[in-house]
Image (tube, rainbow, N blue to C red; front, side, top):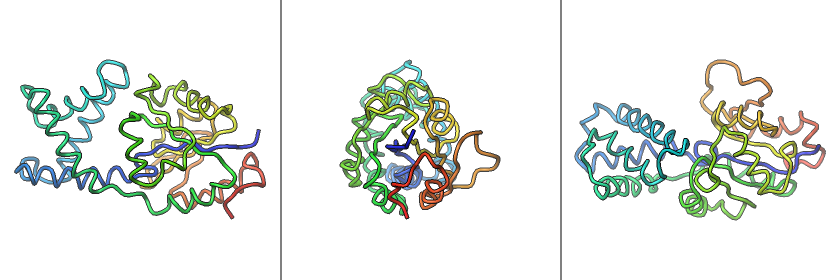
Length: 242
């Protein structure tokens, strides 16, 4: 079957989430007088990201709500289990101000989306919420480029569950064999998409050690998509990338 559409991950694929998270957290800690508490910005970020992963996993498993996992991330990171909901939400909201101030796309995003726009439809599948990703994509000037925006919070299932990928394909009105998924996580994004029957592309911007999962296309930047399109006959002769 020919490829007719691309589904995209957002954070650390289109949007430099790690860069924004790093800068936003550092500025927030400095503003709150906590810059020295964790030893270094890198150490603080490592603890923050670990808390994020722990509590996001609880949300993905249906054990907590989207807003509750945010509050619990703050309590965990600050080692402050006694914080009220209002205090935790206030802390998180102040962090978001700095985080959003650092938002940026990766420089290879717009050229590839422009080149693919003529010949392929586009959508987003994110392990987040529409309330989070829709305004982000609008602020970054991308929302109108996507036919569909499918998020785990509303879908009720998260990547790498095949149902998440199949739900996004259903939103596009296409079978998975006609859809490419591009994401930065080799297991959650690439292996999950492959197992659901999509063409899986792992965007490995940092050059992770070890091989890619079997049956997964691995690229180090979106500028490499032209070679991938040319090499895979399923993309057909209509590729917008030359």
